[in-house]
Amino acid sequence: MKKQLLVGTLMSAACLAPTAFAESVDARLQKLEQELAALKKQPAPKVTTTGVDISIGGFIKANAMLTDYSDGQGASSGIGEDFMVPSTIPTDGEDGNAKTHMDAKASRLWLKMATQTDAGLIKGHLEIDFEGSSQGNEIVTNSYSPRLRHAYLEWNNWLMGQTWSTFFNVGALPDVLDFVGPVGTIFVRQPQVRYTSGNFQVALENPSSTIYGGAENPFDDNTMPDMIGRYNFTAGKAAFSLAVMARELAYENATDKESEMGYAVSFAGKIPVGDGGDDIRLMVNQGNALGRYMALNGFRSGVIEADGGIDLIDQWGVFAAYRHVWNSKWRSSLVLSTAQADNPDEAGDQAAQYDSVHTNLIYSPASMLDLGAEAIYGRKELESGDSGSLNRLQLTAIYKF
Image (cartoon, rainbow, N blue to C red; front, side, top):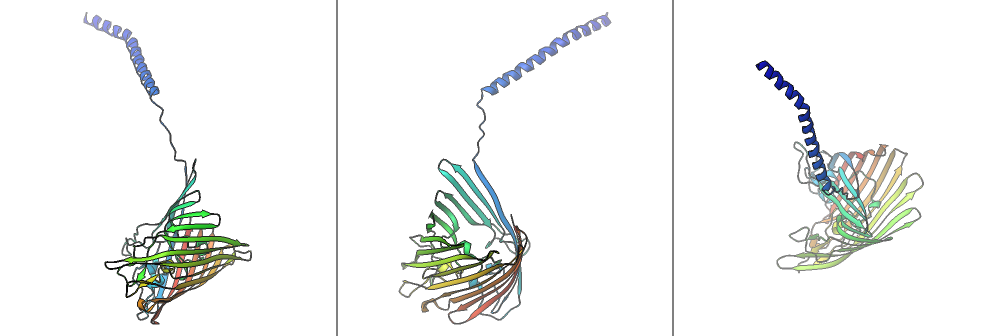
C-alpha cells in the first residue's frame, strides 16, 4: 500500500512539474518586462564633451659638464652649475680643480589646448620643467620638483597669463646647448596681459624692482606694471623686432617710499645667410631700467642714494651669433656677447661687465634627436677691476617629442 502511494505521489509531481516551471519562467519574464519599462521611463544619460583638442610634447635633456673657475670655486650644486649664470662666477679666490656636474633638470613637458566656441577659438599652453628647484639634492635620488614655465590662454588678439616677456624676441636666441646662452640677451618670463594687432604688440607685465642698497632683492612695492610695446617686421627673408619699455622702479621701507620711471630699448633679429640653413642672430639692448631683464639679473636697475632717492643705472648689452649648417645632420654656432653697467659710486664694488663666448658642434641623426658638445667661456668684472672667469665643456643629448 505504501509503495502504491509513493508511486502515485511521484507521478502527480511529474505531471505538475512542467506547469510550475512554466509559471516560474512567466513570472521572471514579466518582472524583466516591468524593469525594462521602468528604465525606458527614465531620462536618457547625457554624453558630454568639452570639445578640447589637446596635444602633448616636450623633450628629455641630459647634460654633463666639466667646469673650471679662474678665481675660486662655484657654489656646490648651485644654479650656476646647471647653466651659465653670469653673476655666480666667483672673483675672489685661487684657481681650483675642475668640477664635473651632470643633470636632467632641463627636461620639459608641455600641453597645448584649443577649443572652438561661439565666441571664437580659445587656446592654452601649460609647461613645466625642473630647473632651479630647491627641492632635491645629489646625495641619493636626484629628485627635483617641477616648476611652472608657461601658463597662458589666448583668445582673439589677447594673451593672458605667464610666458616670455613681450620685450624678449625668443626667435633671435642663438642655437646653443646652454640653457640660456649669451650674457647680453634679454631673458624673462612673467605674468602679463598682451594685445596683438598685426605686427604691433602692447603689454602690461608683472613688475619687480631690483635695487642696490636695500634690505630686499627684489622689492615688490610697484604701483605700475611694466609697460611694453613691440613692432615685428621683415626685410626680405630676415625677421626683426624693436621693443620699447617704460617701467617703475620702486621700494618702500620703514622710513622711505620712493619710485622712479626708467626706460629700455631692445632690437633683435634673425637673418638667413644663403640657402643652406645658415643664419645670423643678433640683439642690442640699452636703457636705464634693463636690470633684471638682461644677463639673468646680472645688474640691478638702480641704487638707493643717501637721501633715499633712486639713481637709475645706465646699461647696455649685445650679442651676435652665426649658425652654420654643415649638412643635413651637423650644425655649429659661434656666439659672442658682452653686457656693461655704468654703476654710480653708491653702488659699491658691484659687477660692471660680463663677457661670454659659446661655440658648439651638434649632430642630429634624426630630427627629434640632438647630440652635441659646447665650449663656454664666461667672464665677470667688478668696478674695482677684480675679475673671474669660467671655462666649461658641456655634453648634451636631447630627445624631442
